[in-house]
Length: 110
Length: 142
Image (cartoon, rainbow over all chains, first blue to last red; front, top):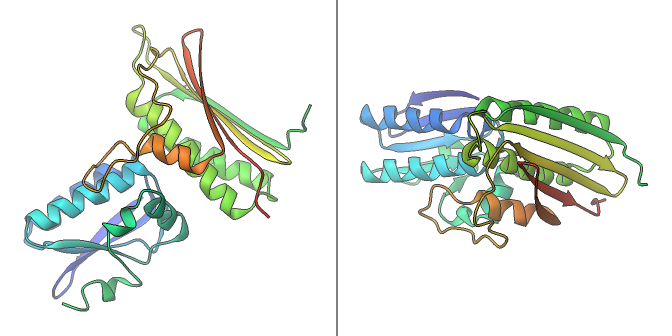
């Protein structure tokens, strides 16, 4: 998985391309920790190019959500693809991780 | 005997990198079994990766030799089957046959419940120092 981030005006966008599984999940946690440490706790994870996520990847997203909220911000996800949506639905995590059609819209309302 | 239309097998040290190889085997399998609908590929592949990840994360060696992960996936006209094995592992105890999906705050523990939700049957077999989870999905969607 290729992970990168860009700090925008009011949030940071992390782009995750590839498979979010037990190999890449720790890397996502590290990147969110780095973004939060640099002072941005409003984070959107752009999943447009994430074709696959397993429960390890989901666990990382939940851990990252907690880290962002503990720092006073939030973590939202955007452009969710069908396999990821299926995992979110089967685990009922679609109620916990707020999903937006695009990264730009994730913090567009506040 | 039901005709096996496509089959992939692998066996290697149960390390995280092995999961990427399971993904590659699944992709190769779907190339060889193009009739399998996208929905079945998605659900079955997710279950297989969960089962293989479970071996890599939780299998405990029963000797000084490291645990090996084995994956044997076959496609027949009406059924997908995967045998995911932990070679040289102690028997997991207790074997949770009816796992509950954890709540919202949990960062782990969803794998087995997710497998249950994704496939038709899950069975466990312990033989000769090997733990094998057999996942099957049938019938195939149109």
